[in-house]
Length: 63
Image (cartoon, rainbow, N blue to C red; front, side):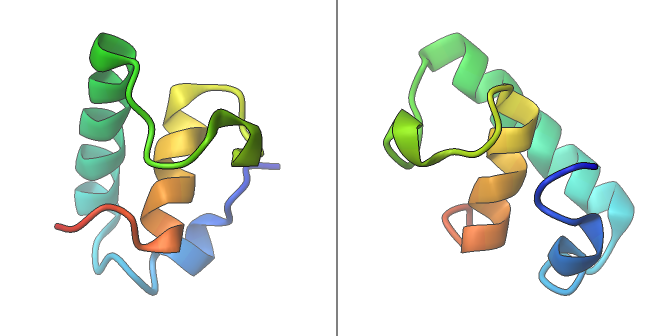
């Protein structure tokens, strides 16, 4: 099961397509710059895409 839940995030982002675009852009940015919004120990996911979704859920990414 994916964490965080897509249903929870869709209450923040109004469209699945917008969510995919934001998460993939942030994930690629993480891979390029190795910059994270939170300390790496606070993330539950190990992969950048999951970490991007966590940042969206916590409101760290403005769109």
